[in-house]
Image 1 (cartoon, rainbow, N blue to C red):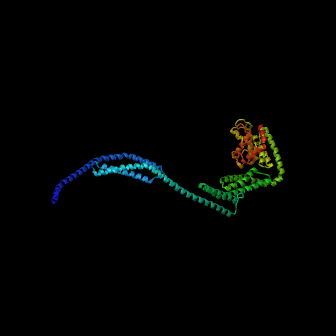
Image 2 (cartoon, helix red, strand yellow):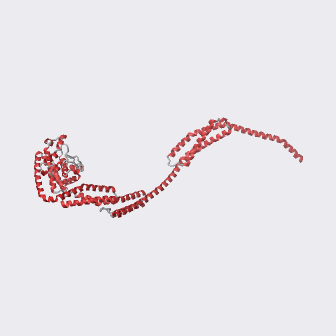
Length: 548
């Protein structure tokens, strides 16, 4: 047994050198194959790298366009999805930087001379670029959806935040408005206590009624606040009411001043009517303004309708400005002459009688010169008398007015007949001569002291309300009231008659024309009285007069 084992061992010892050679040959073969594979890889990698570079370069324009479109779309969104935008930008800048680095390296080194390790690294980096380009494209494709979702979420949050902010602001404004109303009511109470008056001095105003109206208005505002979802409207209503309350004392002072003046004027006018039988203001007009003072103005004041209240107070103020001096002047006149008038009634009657006799002489002279002139003067006188009656003038005043109206054109006696009877258009020289007739008339009447009172009326009967008349260009109250009446009556008759330069008008057309010129050519107060006189007293006469 021992010998066999020994022989076997020797046999095995003889095989060991041969096995070692095989192993060495195998190892050499593997190394050669690896070297060969590495060599082939080294030979092929430059070409592969250039191909991947070309592939990556070809994708760049498309990626840039996609990025431009993304940026354009992002600008249309109200909010930017920061994570999406950050990822897109980071990916794009990485691609640009990596691409630039690889291009710089390849421009500096010749790829076929680079080591295999370097080529493998370059190859992996180009694979990374291509992979990141694909990821970048996917990010760009998914970006609109991400932006839309983010914008919806952001918009919802903004709306919620804005609603919370608006709600807080509205609550603050509501609280401020209610406090303002409370302060306004406290101010009114304090004002009333300090002044010790319940209606701010104006008897037509009632603070109690105003408080009642303001309380009702505030109850309506409370109902509005509880029943509707319109807080801004509620705030506006409260603010308007607060303004009404604060404005009340100042407006009440104005009303008080106007009311005092109106009451004084009413009292004086009543005194003038009852004591002297003379009215300056027509009853209808006085009643209308009394209603405004007692009914309309208090309601407007309570409701705080400032614009309308201001308009009505302005109208009353204008009314007072017109009639206060007239009434005061008439009262002063009547008081000065009441005693004298009682003692000289008979003398005045005699004076008027002599004046009328002389007037008839002048009228006869005018009739001989031109019958139409006489007819015109008589018509003007008739209309003037009717107007004086509507204005409640005394019989004596009306008689003097009648005489002045009959003689208003007496100066035409001195105007050449060729001008008075001329059928064609008058020249400027003719017009200049014709406009001298008021001056001539005054000169004629000055020859007798009996006409001293009416001479100024004749002299100014061609003056107009706006100052465009002649001979002195007086305007408005500067013109004697009798001259103003004669001016309207004469113009009206001239409209009915017509001439070579102006069409003949009907009675209605002439009345409309006179009303149209009220406040411009004619005194608006007298126009109102004149129109009433024509329509109620002289219409039948005028119809027959026009028919002739």
